[in-house]
Image 1 (cartoon, rainbow, N blue to C red):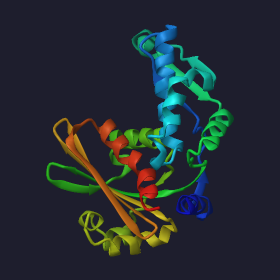
Image 2 (image 1 turned 45 degrees about the vertical axis):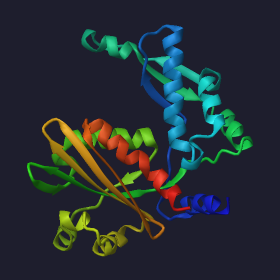
Image 3 (image 1 turned 60 degrees about the vertical axis):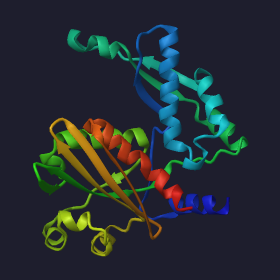
Image 4 (image 1 turned 180 degrees about the vertical axis):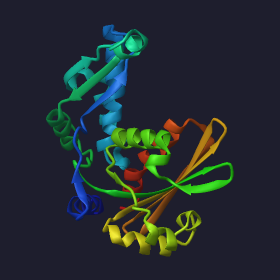
Length: 254
């Protein structure tokens, strides 16, 4: 237990920590506006929220299942969006914004011994390589709007504050895409020291036709945690699957 508290302390005390807002609210699509489908969507929304705030080791805690089964009880407010035009109206009419009662959920889980991450979280430096047609390139938002959109969405869903390297002439002179993906991280960590972060994430997004695959490595607390997805996925699912593991990786070290 002391190790878990140490991890939380480290997250709260790092100089690069920021406050993440909106951890207990999200948007989901409902199948319809009926009470049954609305409650189903609310349960999905609560699952997203719990993935953001519950420490990895406690995701299978019986209290999590209990909370999900009673998800509507923890709703502070909800609202369906209104479609702005006929083409988008069907989807927009089913877009449900849900805000949960933060105090109720925190009280429930703390009393039940479920560990929670708070809203003060370290910025994670992401070195991302995008590979297509055999060419590896540094991710740059201006040149890769599709990747930028999905990364921003995944970061929002996971409550993960990301920062990106400057990729100025000095960095690109010392560091290549292959260096980022190297099994020896010394050069990467040396270059990353200018950002004063405790959490460094490297990733490779590989596109082959309509398929995307991801490989990731998290450097945290002088240790490394690696994971990946080798099956065919959408870019949306690949980005989300990658970022979802970051807090689990940090907990893996405790």
